[in-house]
Amino acid sequence: MTADLSELRALLLDRDRLVSAVAAGRIKGTEAPPHTRLRPVTVKAGEALQLETSDGARPTVQNLPWTPETVDELLARPYGNWHVELTDATVQVRVTKRGKAFLHRTEASRVRDTSHDRAKPHLIAPDDPLFDVVGGDAAKRRQVDAFLHLVDGSLTGSTPLRVVDFGCGNAYLTFAAYRHLAASREVEVIGVDVREDQRVRNGQVATELGCADRVRFVADTAASADLPGADVVLALHACDTATDEALARGVSLGAAHIFAAPCCHHDIAAQLRSGSAPAPYGSLVRDGILLERFADTLTDALRALLLRSLGYEVDVVEFIASAHTPRNTMLRARRADVPAALRTAARVEYDGLVAAWGVKPRLAGLLG
Ligand SMILES: C[S@@+](CC[C@H](N)C(=O)[O-])C[C@H]1O[C@@H](n2cnc3c(N)ncnc32)[C@H](O)[C@@H]1O
Figure 1: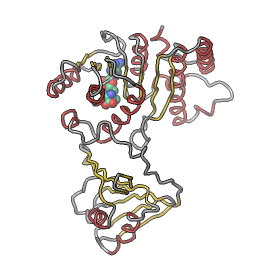
Figure 2 (figure 1 turned 90 degrees about the vertical axis):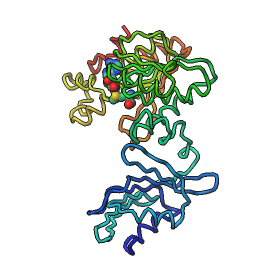
Figure 3 (figure 1 turned 60 degrees about the vertical axis):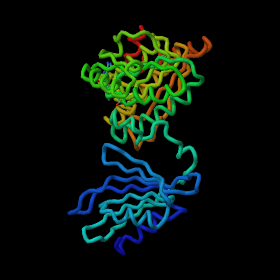
Figure 4 (figure 1 turned 180 degrees about the vertical axis):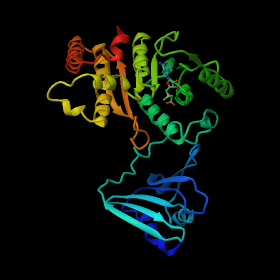
């Protein structure tokens, strides 16, 4: 560490103000050290510094003593940039080839949270050996774990379950869901994706993991896959209207629980672009970025209303912080004994919204 880094060192050791920090990039002429995110956490032994290090493929998480030695070891690595979040400021640090540190501060106001909730133990940790076989980058591993936390919070008991994961892609969530749920019950998991190459690849992974008798894959659309029924439906970032197909299949397969984190929302966005907004709401869709964000909101609001009108209790939540994926919304639906009046109210609200905005949601067409 050069003397120039002493100010940064003091910030990383500031037990009253440090919220988090990210070290990235490299000093010119050196080899890039792995991207590292750190934050204070409270563990049994007291306060520690949690380091999440990623080379872009395999993240590792370690809780280390929050000591000058730990910080000095980090500062000895040739990071070119540091982004430090304090309770009262954000500090950007650029480190030059000569070891000079340029600090730029802006005021901020943050609450430091090292509570149990933030330090919630992983269900499937990013460095779990399962991912050595299944793969998945650091962001996807975190999404899968966060997704499973919401699934876990909704499923009680130990009754056998058939789970269908629509738009499963490389099946990171499919295998993680199997691993987690199979610890407490009998589980059969089916991954559905339009791509035949995914089916073949995922089938090989299931064999490698020794669970091919319990985890299988179908190459077909979510709308038309031949499936025996489902208790739980999952869909993580199923493209555009594939999420609608997953929701509709969840209903038609009789799923008691549906968890869908939608991806892009092109369908309604295109309809808004070619239609006209009801007065006085034109400004919501005049600018491209606002139109896209409004399309996201309208699409998910209409999906929730349709499911509510069919007797599902639905909440729309953030399943993970937006820093990990901008697509961090989840529709969480549970089939329930919703009174007829509430179902009707949801339908009336839905009819009013589609009439006002002149849109035809794909989900409505699929539900018939
Ligand atoms: C963005 S990827 C997400 C994959 C995976 N769930 C994940 O989070 O890593 C979306 C996947 O949906 C699949 N897909 C697209 N349309 C589909 C449809 N109609 N039915 C089933 N899968 C579909 C794609 O082939 C792709 O693998």
